[in-house]
Length: 437
Image 1 (cartoon, rainbow, N blue to C red):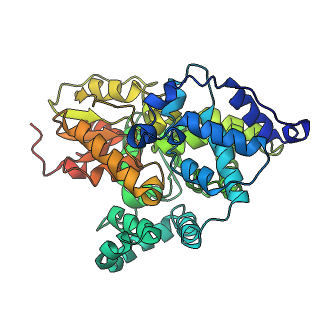
Image 2: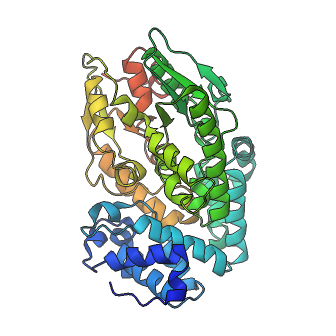
Image 3: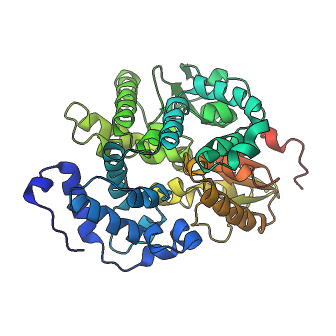
């Protein structure tokens, strides 16, 4: 793609990076076939190619974002299926990240939209606030139908629909501590506690810590860790995202220097994609660039790390598991085979759903802010998963678990919960009343 940026514009490193990305696009349109919003809506401007044209025009002309640009960029899930498909290597992720930051700086959204986004940014990254918000949601449920009828209030109806009716108590495993290995020590790792996940399903990190310590790995839950920053990062709130990244880099660097780390274990693939990008996000910060790159190099999805260990093969359990590959796992981190291979080696009968490359519609806060498109994608995803006739659905991202779980009666658990069970841990709570034979 030919570009016409001025030397003054290219002096901005963010614009210079976007210009390089734009030049790689050859308009081939391969991305449209795998883009969930284009497949759903059929609008060229709701495809990666269409959004690239909009972003180019906005940045090249040095103008503020307008309502059209914001509409179509907001509809992007950042699923990154287009990145997997693109034969030219267009780095769409960093291009749309820049566009979102530009929108946040130059566009004044309608009041209710600003309010919803401010609430999400102030609540979701903070476990205590998030827990309180879920508890308070029961008071709002009687009004959900009314809220859904007003377009400006629809996100609140979506929040109520997604909020679980009960949440488990806070887990002791979320507290800062070091969990020693059982038997001979094989390694030492830190684990990301996260923000939404320990509230919605603390059993995921509990299973991870139990499994790793049984395998001889010391697991450290560091003091001072905060949200990875992905939720606000994808809202264009770049300074808030970078502040979180810096705080975590400080925490993990301290652990690295004090006791050494083989990896930083992440059990939510959405967080993993962002943490693996810390080196890029902080590349212009002289005080953090080198340490952030080191943290990114140590970040590993739990299945990625387990695949590096020697695990015994297990006798078949005869349980059919449909594996949902989260977008942030398969497109963001390019981890496609390890989770399925681990489940198969652990004795599960793993099945792949049709259209596995398409997003389930969760995408951070997308299922709140773009609930109509999200619901259409969820329906499509659930239909494909249920067609495999599974007893259980497994995935590696809490957002996908919550999204898909509202559309099917089939229990959905984290991949590591099944692996913990297979290698000597307890059966996941969601499966205890289910006939699995």
